[in-house]
Length: 157
Image (cartoon, rainbow, N blue to C red; front, side, top):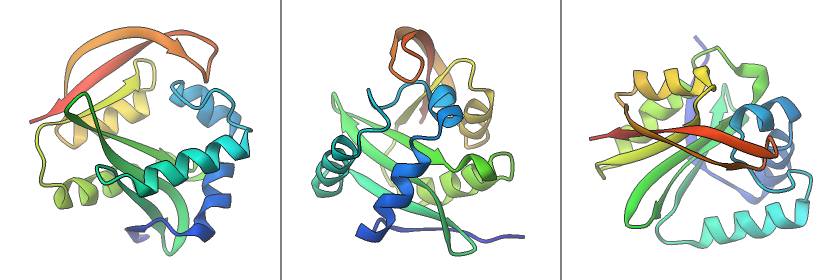
């Protein structure tokens, strides 16, 4: 079985992560993305803020040593949330499930919250396998689809 590992994000990872996060199908599926996924300056500014923030833990996800995504926890309105992004070329291979399990094992904080577009069955399945339970939904504007989208809110207690 291919090895999934987490490590700190390095400067050299940014170009790959930028490309992953602008894949049109991935953007559509994630829905709640950057306003303009093709804006490299905005991406770089965001990543600089994220990597410098003391309440953000962001990690690169590798598959047999190849960068295939990222995962992070952050605090918003005094609640810890997490997010992840996986290279579409490895969707359905258990990479997100294994990366999330590793990340949660190292994250001592509970509860943890996550959100996913309600029609993103793959991401919802990954979160539910990790023990997250649906606690609600809300409708919000999703830049990745340029329309309002229902988002499922999940909690791991």
